[in-house]
Image (cartoon, rainbow, N blue to C red; front, side, top):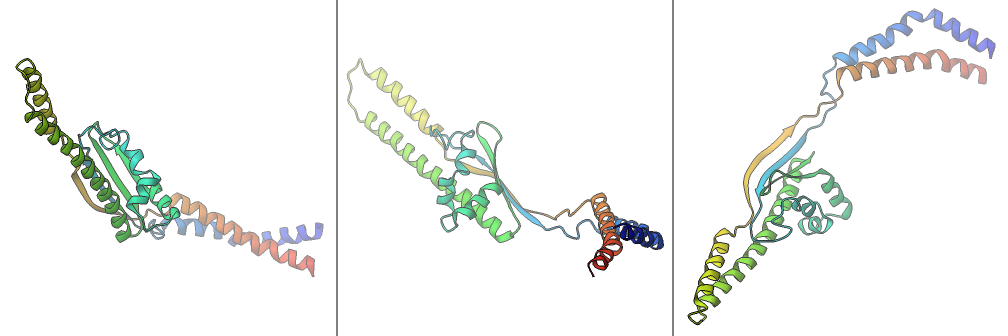
Length: 226
């Protein structure tokens, strides 16, 4: 063991110049290499949606919509052809944020342009379709209530109440609205940033030290084993 350490020390002294130079050169090379050399592009689709107004506890509540859109049940409906694992991956890249009592933003990011747009559109279209169906059901109930009340014959004493109810129902009908996209951003492409120059420089230095270590030490271990 003592002889091996002596030989290692001798090899270090003999090759000290390049042992020092190698980490410095690799560190400098890592620093000046283009920072995006290993980066990959990502694509993001985003839209702002105004929530509907027809008294639904989930689809009209912008605090609940983020939970709704990222739920397993909703994603299974929106993406029936994907596996559970694929939908879990979608969930991790789907962002739904509440901006106000009536506004949310939905964004989805991925590395494949066509798939990113396909998944994003599937989520948006499913939400809007469900919302439209619920809106139409509510609007139908209100229309039927108005028609029934207008066709009802009441006594003179109840006429005031009838007019008041009709007024309230007509106001409700006027205020009913389905959700809708108010702003849809074009798909944004973000180039990968790769590793920062300082980190690449440190990595270069570490690689240089590792190479020097292998050149100096490993031959001695093989020599001892022979």
